[in-house]
Length: 400
Image (cartoon, rainbow, N blue to C red; front, side):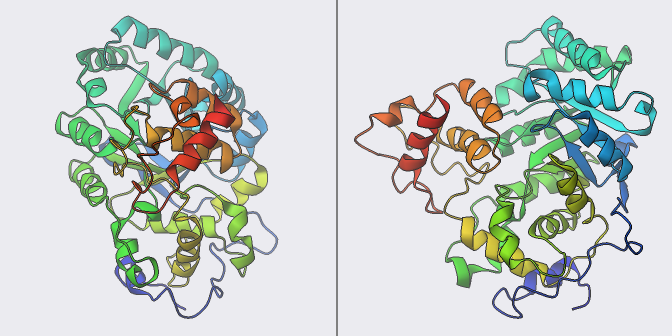
């Protein structure tokens, strides 16, 4: 099949043509390694980055950073909380001597009542671990409550940090159940030059709209594309994360053909969205880096839809959609169901128990009550069929 527009891509039938014939996803010489083919500008910032960037939530190996550099990756993202700071240290070690060639971002979780002094202390800790005097982007991390963005200390701190040359641009990242209201507030009040958001084909209403005959439901997050379009209209850089809808890549290997993979199809779907500039993906091995980089600049093909549809069919009843909110008030004990399921995903799907336990420990109300629950009021609360009681009990057993 030839290349097609996103509009026609959405119209391709998921039930025809089989799961084959994807063809090569990027041009390369005989025997040569894949390399980033496209660089993009993040909104009004003038920061030019590789359209596929290095996420470090699940790694702390300087050699992986160097491997990504060799493949043309120029966008490196980390956070003070990743691997207890070891991810920042690994990136800092690997970027010695090449800092001026890359765009570097890190994150802190600035709370609703945190003071400027605390935020500055966190920033300076990241700068030390990263062996640099400035960050290109500094995100308020994992924002899931509007009051965190309403804290005027964040604005004052980032203004001061910019004046001191310690950061160039500020941003907001989010992947929780209240993502859209937080994004709306940050955009409306000019609190972010760049937003980093959970966004995949599994959260795109247009994807499910074309597959109603297969899944018998429609996506219930229509506001996520709207808010991304609003950010784009204001020339705010938009970076996507969690683009693999749970990242169960091995489940898809039997269906991949001609060297093209589910991950590459998922990346091309997201990057074909005119409201998305780039994406970040956790890179945990040199083989994964090569697979991911090979998706750069590839044209969207109709056959990609078959891989995405197959994955959605296999995973739709086990993957919690970030920002759905359908189960928010289902538990009379106040268990943060969506957040509990997110931490479970890190362990079960990502294979990163350390990250899962770290985030689980930070939940306001964890899943302890689920271990002795008899009412199971959350049963049936998920429109996608996720067995909430079983998954929350499993999370409590794994991560408490």
